[in-house]
Amino acid sequence: MPKSFDQLAAGAADGWSEDAKQVHAAASEVFEREMTVQSEFGLMLAAAREEQQMTQQALAAAAGVRQPEISRIENGQANPTLETLARLTAALGKRLTLTS
Image 1: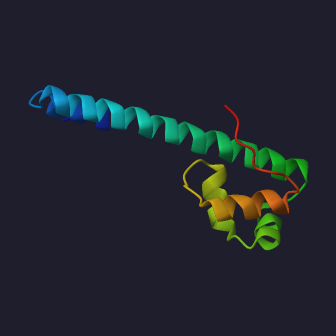
Image 2: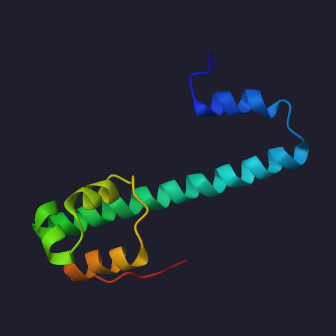
């Protein structure tokens, strides 16, 4: 019995066409990047909140975002909307900036 999703997918991929394998590889790469970004943002949010000496509850009240959602974001387990990100960063006195 496979012990991970990767092992399960590898076994299933044996019967896939080359196109299907390429699509799976591309989708997996995008998914991994998204998970990395979510995790990194969560760490930055937690650091900014702690820098302001705020609890998650205090940030929730200031931003109008539920505390469990803040916890999920900080743990890299949520995909917040742009509006949520803007509310959280504004409550922390920060700005969102895109860089390359």
